[in-house]
Image (cartoon, rainbow, N blue to C red; front, side, top):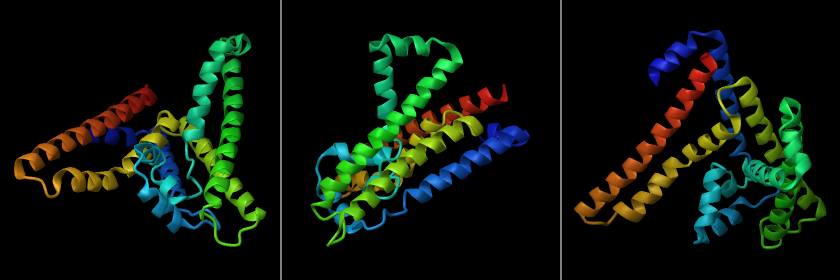
Length: 242
């Protein structure tokens, strides 16, 4: 991996792509900590901690902690993923879309454009549901007016659209598939917190044999994830260099 990166940095085009990708990932991590105006983040963090449903933890991992922080990137890349799945299903069900997909590069560009619009639509619906549903329970500050709800909806929708745009820019000007890279960095960013949680649940307070066994299993899973990510990035670098 280190040798591949060293050789890649010797080539100007690849070096620029790597630096661009890194810059975009920094922007994503910064946006993941930027709070939505008027939101009571303490309320949402307490509500999230009280949930026993693993689906929320899974969703938060996909958003790189943005969901729990209730940042402008709270929806993150998930609306785009959902939109892509919907378009794949519609392509099978609707003959016109199927023809469009088979219509070469122009057809794929049209489908990509439709996917973007669907993503914005889904983001708007999800943002409105979150703002209204959680807002009535204390997510927004007291004495909130309609304008406060609108600000939250616009911020979450714009944040999701911006993450989608970053993913596409990484694909065009960076390294590999931008959406996959954004998703990967989100999951990796949650690993320190997840490791702490796993330690508290499976290692802390256990007998030495059980603790060692749990630690080995956790370490094996982490190593497998790291190797998988490294292989993906190596394949991306090789593809670009060719």
